[in-house]
Length: 254
Image 1 (cartoon, one colour):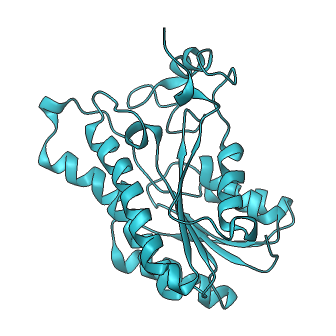
Image 2 (image 1 turned 60 degrees about the horizontal axis):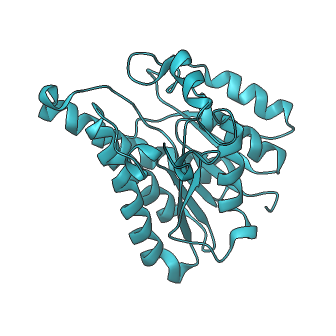
Image 3 (image 1 turned 90 degrees about the vertical axis):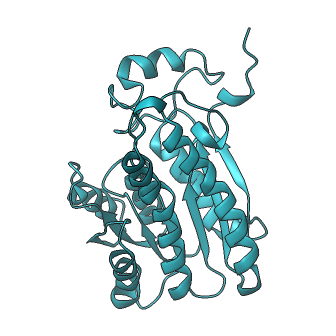
C-alpha cells in the first residue's frame, strides 16, 4: 500500500470502519471518516486512534440515504487532500423484522442504506477517483452466503451488494479501478452485539464455539483484508467477494 493515498470510509465511527481508518493510518493512507449524525458512537475516538497510529484524517457527517450528502462526502477528500484513491462502503443498519411484519417502509428503508447507500458511495467515489483506484463494499454472510430468518430485507440487501460489485468491476475495469466485496462472518461489532436486532453478547459467545477458529472475529481482522483489497498487492483482483469468517461457512454441520 502506497503512503500518501486518500480513502473515504462510510460508517467509520465504530466497528470495522473505525478499525479500517486506524489500519490505513498505520500505512500512510489519509482517511475521510464518515459518520452518521444519529450514530451514538463518537467519531472523535476514531480520529484519536488515527492520530495515535501516526496518521491523518478528517471527520465528515454523511447520510448514505442522500445523494447530495454522499457526493459532498466524496468531494471532501478532494478538497482536503487533493485526490481520492480508495472508497469503502461500510455503513449499514440491521433491523429484525419477521416476514409477516415486513412493511414496504421497513423493506425500503433497509435497502436504501445497505444497498442503495453502497451504490451512492461507489458512484460518488468513482467520479472523483484517480485511475488505478480501488473500492470495497462490505456485505455479510447473511445474504452473501446464508439466509437469516426475520432478516429478509437485510439479507437481500447484502446479497445485492455482491451483484453490484461484479457489475461495477466490469464497468470500471478499463479505467484501472478495481471493485471487490468482503463478506464478514460473525464479527464482534456494536451491530452484532445488539441483542434485539442481532445475536447479542451471549449469542456471539455461543456461536464462536462452533467456528473452526474457535471464536468470533475482530473488526481489525476484516479491516486488514479490506486494506489488502485496496492495496497494490491485489492489483489483479477485481469483482470478487472474499469471505472473512474464521471457517464458519466451510464447517460441516452434524
